[in-house]
Structure formats: C-alpha cells, structure tokens
Length: 74
Image 1 (cartoon, rainbow, N blue to C red):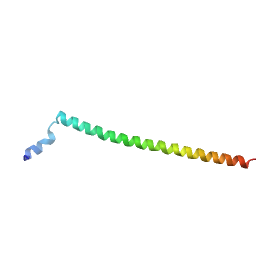
Image 2 (image 1 turned 45 degrees about the horizontal axis):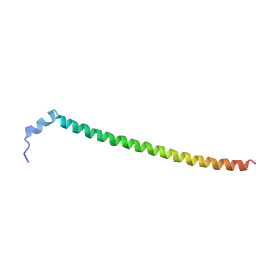
Image 3 (image 1 turned 90 degrees about the vertical axis):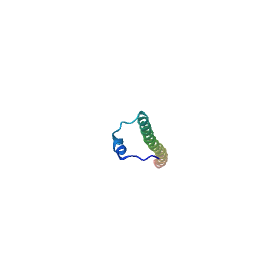
Image 4 (image 1 turned 30 degrees about the vertical axis):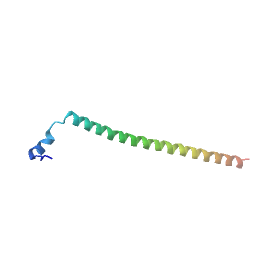
C-alpha cells in the first residue's frame, strides 16, 4: 500500500471527477431514488388496502343496521 502525501490529500477535493466516478455516483443516486420510490409505493398500497378493508367493514355494518332498522319499522 502506498503512502498518500499531504499535497495529494489537499488537491483531491479540487480535482475534476473522472467519467467512471460520475457514472458510479449517478448509479448510486439512482439506486437511492428507486428505494425511496419503492417505499412510497408500499406506503400507498397499504393505504389502498386499509381503505378497501374499511369500506368492506362499513358496508357490512350498514347492511346489519338496515336489516335491524327494517325489522323495527314493521
């Protein structure tokens, strides 16, 4: 392993990145954005599932109360 000189360390932040470094950084960014988007999709799907279940439950309760109310009004 070679030793890094102090001047190399000081110059490093000011060097222009190579095309390979830019591609690697852009690819890493794309992976992070994909993970974020997938998290959003999972969250949205859970909200859709929750509301479908809720609607089914409320419709069932509504049917019960309609039946009960119809029996009371005879």
